[in-house]
Length: 456
Ligand code: ADP
Image (cartoon, rainbow, N blue to C red; front, side, top):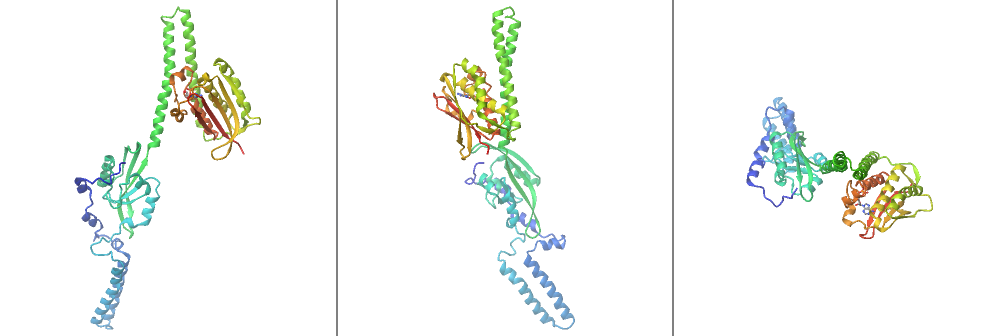
């Protein structure tokens, strides 16, 4: 919401929207047909007390005069003295009270109302029936610094959608809801609700006000965008190998029907594409399974040392194929953590396999396991996978764990990658209340550290 303080309201708006004092007066004028309680309800306490004293004094003096115990002159003098005694202190103690001032006390004075508005966690502004700000909380002042108490909100909030909604709410006294995009300093989707409410005034009356609240819809929108992106990415990733498969099937049924050599080659490619699809579906299912159980922390105690050895043994054939040597520097004592065995195997397979695939040019991958401490000082087991390949340019590091994010999409696909491996690693670590640290120096390889808290 751009700050609007320096901008002057245009005349047309001020004519249309500025509150007319006579309007306000007519609001508070006493209705002669109203019952006595509502008539008294509009009087300040002290004036009401004075009226009651005068009424009682008048009755007593009239009774004394009629019974002959008091002369009319003396009764008149006594009555005027009592009038003075009852009214003067009220005038003296309440200098604000004058015939020109409305008897109603504005809800701005009601501490309970301001406390409720101030206590709301979302930006909230209480407006009078003309749109003037009565109260606003800190969040609202931060969101729209141009809002000022006793000034028209329409002038401070220049967003056309809000101004239109406010005008409608004022004219129709019905709730209004409007969504708009606030572009500065970063794009945010905001929803504004304007709800007419009757606010009790200090002396028992009611004032028609408008409560305007702002709801930041940005997180919801972002999740919605991420969901749409995810579906688009997943279908794209599946469609590519599927298109290749159906293309080769057509070729094998047509031009290459009798070409044994081509058939052999195409079947090999089709097998690789089918494997890629299966892997993608496998990774997607694993991700959703880990996400589903994200809130349940695994509690099985297991030793990371044999688990890492099992992963390394399983990847030896790939290491041979890529001509990479896997070196190990594992702790000599059991590295006990609370974990889910299958998920941890998946996690380390992804990290070591990435080292073998993307860091093959370095010729070696070092897997180490040491004790360390978290940034908060808690003891943890730190499993490190280090390769000596080309490394990862720093601008890619923060995004590596996003689903389908790749530094080089062609390279990843050529290696049979799905772009989901590190997303899965991050989710598994989150479930284990661990953390992932990625370090890389261009040309010197990359180090992925998976750290797990040590159980007490
Ligand atoms: P993929 O299935 O593509 O391997 P990942 O999520 O495991 O997906 O990795 C995401 C990307 O991070 C990879 O495509 C690759 O570009 C980069 N990457 C991961 N590990 C390494 C590494 N050890 N060295 C260089 N780049 C890596």
